[in-house]
Every structure is written in C-alpha cells, then in structure tokens.
Image 1: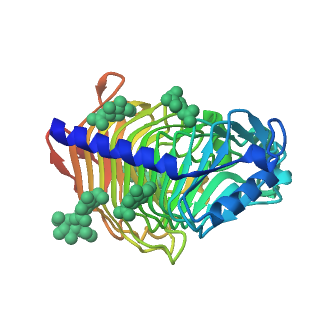
Image 2 (image 1 turned 135 degrees about the horizontal axis):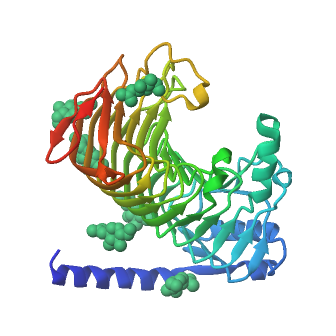
Length: 392
Ligand SMILES: *[C@@H]1O[C@H](CO)[C@@H](O)[C@H](O)[C@H]1NC(C)=O
Ligand SMILES: *[C@@H]1O[C@H](CO)[C@@H](O)[C@H](O)[C@H]1NC(C)=O
Ligand SMILES: *[C@@H]1O[C@H](CO)[C@@H](O)[C@H](O)[C@H]1NC(C)=O
Ligand SMILES: *[C@@H]1O[C@H](CO)[C@@H](O)[C@H](O)[C@H]1NC(C)=O
Ligand SMILES: *[C@@H]1O[C@H](CO)[C@@H](O)[C@H](O)[C@H]1NC(C)=O
Ligand SMILES: *[C@@H]1O[C@H](CO)[C@@H](O)[C@H](O)[C@H]1NC(C)=O
C-alpha cells in the first residue's frame, strides 16, 4: 500500500467509526438494575431484549466495575447490528452446579453483525471446578465453557479477556465471517487436565484470529471439522498445547478442513507448536487440505511441528487400522526457534492414505544447540531451502 492509500483508508475507517458510534443507541445495564457487585443476569437479559429489538444499531454497555452473572443464553435474529461493550469484570459462579449444566456460561446465537468489545473480563472462576474435576473425573457433573458463539455472521470480538474458564474458553460453531482482534485468554498452564482449550472452532467459514494472546492449559486454538478459510495471524500462544487441527476422525459425519493459514505467531513453552491430529481406527474420512504455517517462532516447544495420524492420548484407543483422513498440500515455512525434543519435526502420516504435498521450507529449529531432526512415516516431504531431512 502506498501512503496516500493508507491515509485515505484511515480516514474512511475513522469516519465509519464516528458514524457507527454516533448511531448506536446505548443500553446501559445500570438502567436495567445492573449494579456493581450484584448479580446482573436479569439486567443483562432485559437489556438484550430491548437492544435486539432496536431498529437502529444498539450497544449494551457494562461499565467498569465487578459484577456477578449466572448462565445466559441469548439469541437473534436482531433487527440491527448489536454490540456488547464490556469494560467491567463479570464473574461466573464458582460452583459449577450453579450453572445448571449449561453448555456455556454465556451463549450468543443466530445474530448477524454482532460485536463484543471493551477492555473487560469474563472471569469463569474455574479454579474450584478444576479441583473438583481432578477428584471426581468422569463422574463429575458437566462443566461449562466461558463463551459460545453459535451461527453468527459478520461478527467481531475485540479486546476483551476470557479468564479461568471451567472448560474450553470460547467455542465457535457454524459461524461465518467472524474476527477476533486483540482478544486475550488467561488460565494457568496446569489447568490442562480440564481441557481449557482457548478457542475451539467448528463448522465455520472465514474466521480470523488476529493480534491476540492466548495462555491456557490446553490447545491455544483447536480447529475441528468443517472449517474453511481460517486465518491465525500475529497470535502469541503459551503456556498451552499450541495450534491444532483436530483431533479429527471420531465422527463419520465430519466435513473437510481446508484453506487454513497460521502466520507470524510465537509459541512459548507449549507442548506443541503447530499440529494436525487424527485418530486411528476411526470412521471419519473427510480430507484436510491447503494449510500453511509460516513465520512461526518456537520458544522451548516440546513438539514444534507435528502431524500425528496415530493420535491416541493415554493409549485409550485401538491402533489396529490406520486413519482414513487424507492430509495434503501442507506447507511449513520459515519456522525457527528451540525444540525441547530432538525431533523438532514429526510427520507421522496414515499408512492407509499417505500425506501428499507436504512442504518443509526453511525450518531451523535447534535442540540443545544442535539442529533438530525430522522423523517421518508415510510421507515424502518436499524440501525447500534449509530443512532437516527425514529419518524413519
Ligand atoms: C481500552 O484500553 C485501551 C488501551 O489501554 C484504550 O486505548 C481504550 O480507550 C480502552 N477502551 C475502553 C472502552 O475503555
Ligand atoms: C464481515 O463482517 C464485518 C463486521 O464484522 C463487516 O464489516 C464486513 O463487511 C463483513 N464482510 C463481508 C464480506 O460480508
Ligand atoms: C508479528 O506479530 C507481532 C506480535 O506477535 C507483531 O508485533 C508484529 O508487528 C507482527 N509482524 C507482522 C509483519 O505482521
Ligand atoms: C489455500 O488457502 C489460502 C488461505 O485461505 C487461500 O488464500 C488460497 O486461495 C487457497 N488455495 C487453494 C488452491 O484453494
Ligand atoms: C494440492 O495441490 C496440487 C497442486 O497445486 C493440486 O493439483 C491438488 O488439486 C491439490 N489437492 C487438493 C486436495 O486440493
Ligand atoms: C508414529 O506413531 C506411532 C504410534 O504412536 C509410533 O509407534 C511411531 O514410532 C511413530 N512414527 C513416527 C515416524 O513418528
């Protein structure tokens, strides 16, 4: 872009911002009885009802203070664009049973032109639920995720923080044209046994995660089946389990994953860097194709680059037959930094449907100061520039 284009784009954006904020009708939860240090569940639901019915753009404002809120599940369609600006801290009940088994603490569905903004925090206060979970395991009552966005179109999440979710932080299901920009996720690295994934995306198209920081116990971002055109750009991950495609294969009705780009990201002290995982002896057959992982920095990452088509955590599955998921056209380009294991690159593809079109381009990972190695099965990667060659 030349300077004049940048300048005129900036002016247009500025005018759009001005007109956007000028038009919005504000629904402050205080006018609905939502007071600091009190439960704002009903105030929020009432504000949503009015804002969603507004024929001009609306903004629900939750101003700087601390509030308590129980499970809420709000739906569109709304009559005009709707925004929730959270500048305060909203706290979930610490007792997981208080959420009555809700799938998510906050669920927002079937809205077009939805925006979540502000510098506030959704505090899932998960620490006691994690402790309970460790004690009761599979017999535990269901834990709620912090936020679920279902079937939203043309929507944006800016600046807000999701903290200490009892389970996954955020899930997207069936969304189209959805952007996270400057989003933050914070939970301790040892919340791992609880699946505190950062952002899980399923069956969505045109999703962008930009300029965000994710620190949690499980995958920073996990992409399930049916995702197309997903961009992860300028995102920092760690602690956590890195960026994962999958796990895939467990469900026979799964849909393909394609056109994914992860660029200019840094992973620090994570279990994995960039990973694709599919289950062996599983019914899913939908292919995975056209993925690019580019300009990635690894800082003390256990498995920086890994395709694992024999994904079977704790050996709780049968490895009798190979994964039926075909992985093709995957580029790993300009990946540098430090590996915590000697095999910085593991490409463990399916013997049933070997990987095709996997490219390793300028990979410079070190383990204890020496170049890290690559271990491969059922794949013949194309090597461009400097990259480790495969051993079995
Ligand atoms: C959020 O924080 C940023 C940076 O601290 C500040 O520029 C912005 O005005 C804040 N937004 C609100 C709505 O308080
Ligand atoms: C995507 O959504 C944004 C709002 O988040 C909107 O401004 C933009 O026009 C949408 N893009 C398309 C192609 O519809
Ligand atoms: C890469 O990401 C970092 C943040 O992690 C950002 O500061 C930097 O500007 C980005 N570089 C490019 C070229 O986008
Ligand atoms: C591959 O994915 C990228 C990123 O979404 C996209 O820009 C490109 O057009 C795709 N290529 C093909 C051949 O589909
Ligand atoms: C992979 O890329 C090759 C070369 O660009 C292309 O011919 C092929 O159709 C692609 N495979 C898939 C499954 O899209
Ligand atoms: C692939 O995974 C299997 C099962 O975990 C393991 O036995 C094998 O050594 C792995 N191969 C490579 C090349 O990593």
